[in-house]
Length: 254
Image 1: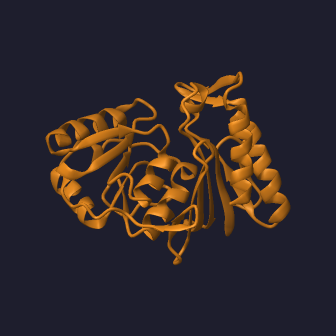
Image 2: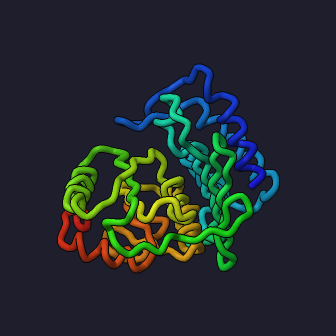
C-alpha cells in the first residue's frame, strides 16, 4: 500500500501542472505522469520483490509471467487526469496466475486507500467495507464507463437504455478500478464496463468479492483477469440485472 500511496503523491503533485499527452492508439491517451508513476512502482516493487514478475499497462511485462506477479495500473482514469478531473487512482494487485491474492486501489485526491487480501475482507482506510444489499433496480445507483467507443460500447448503451425505466440514476466514472472499489465500499450498487484489461480489473475483482459481492463477465460467467467486460454487484441484484437484460447484444458482441 505504501508504494501505491507514493505513486499517488507523484500524480497529485503533478496534477495541476502542464501535462504531456500522447496517444497509444485511437482515443487511448497516455500522459508523462502515467509513465513516471509506473517506472517508480516498478523500481520499488522490483527492489522489494526481485523474484516476482510485473505486468504494467504502460511498460508491459518484466520478469516471470507465470507464478506470482504484480499487476500495475499506474494511472487508471488517464482521460480524467489529462483534463484536470480529480477522479483517478493507482491500481495494484498481486496474483498467482489468474488468482488475485492482494488488491490495492489508491485515490490520491481523496486520500482513500481501498485494499483486500484474499479471505480477509475488503477495507477502506482500514475500515471493513461491504457491498450494499439493495435488490431492486429502481432503488439502485449504477456506475458505468464506456472507454473505447466500439461495437461493445454501442451494445452497452443499448443495454443501459433498456434498463432506464428501472434505474434510480447512472454515474459515469472515468475509472474502472474506482468503479469496482465503489461497489465494494457500498457507494455504487452496480458497476458495468464493456472493455477491460487485466490491470483495470485485477484489484477491483478481489475487492468486490471480499466485500460480499459478485463479478460476472459479459457471458454471465465468473469475472476474471481475462474478462473483456464485467458487471459487479451483490448476488441478488446481479440476478435481477441478468433477468432484465436477458438476450441483450452486450452478452455476445465481439
